[in-house]
Amino acid sequence: MRALLIVDLQNDFCPGGALAVPDGDKIVPVINSIMDKFDLVVSSQDWHPDEGEHFKKWPPHCLQNTRGGDFHPDLRSDKIDIKLLKGTDGSDTGYSAFEATNIDLVKLLKEKNIDKLYITGLATEYCVKATAIDAAKNGFDTYLIVDATKGLDEEKSRKTIEELEKIGVKPVVSTEIL
Ligand code: VGL
Picture: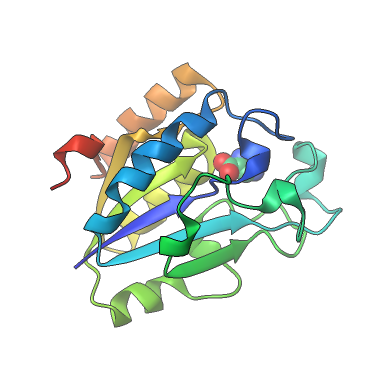
């Protein structure tokens, strides 16, 4: 059984948002086009209180119950089975979707017999990277859909994909997913 994981495809990480990833919105149609191919679709959202350690490093973004924290409006969010929230306590944690505070992701995936995890979303060199590392560490067969992720910095994102490959995360393109 395989799951699609959509990391932080939120307004604040898209052009016009508080911590915008260049062309972050361009991956939305790619993700929309593959959502029906998975047994389970899981999303993560940064869901921050309005102050805390995290905002000493980053401009305030993805505040709880704000438009910036909402999914990009074009994402087919009605197709998401499980919505994870992370970074909810203001500390500088919660880069990885496995640190979600409302759901234990490992337990959920095991209960649903998911062995393959396909990771997409924003931003490649931060939350996507942290999520992929945790997925591999927890023994999932982990894929990164490279045309369904974007980073804040192109060069750092390219290096991230190489680093992830070294720990066993497999880069794939969306059209390879049948
Ligand atoms: C992210 C920086 C700060 C991300 C979140 O979603 O990749 N990056 N907070």
